[in-house]
Image (cartoon, rainbow, N blue to C red; front, side):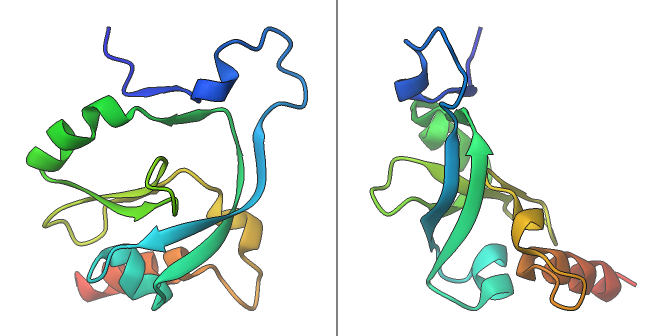
Length: 122
């Protein structure tokens, strides 16, 4: 098996999972020129999390060699927060929950970016 997405290191020894998720607002550094950076128009963002899993860094280089761009990383360079597919108009995934910071009259930058990309395809 290849655990590309795996339990966070600090979660692996926990048997009683209650109240042990990565919760709350965390910083993320964006790579210049990426879909994410263009959507936010910032160098660093803060997003809300609710999870126990992470991208396994053992696979980072292999994924990058095959067209994946890790466009958002934690400031300590340990956690992949955003991944994109190179040369695709808008294939983007996030570890955080963009819907947590979206509002009816102020949609999240990633939602706006997705709609702009879709509109540009027509």
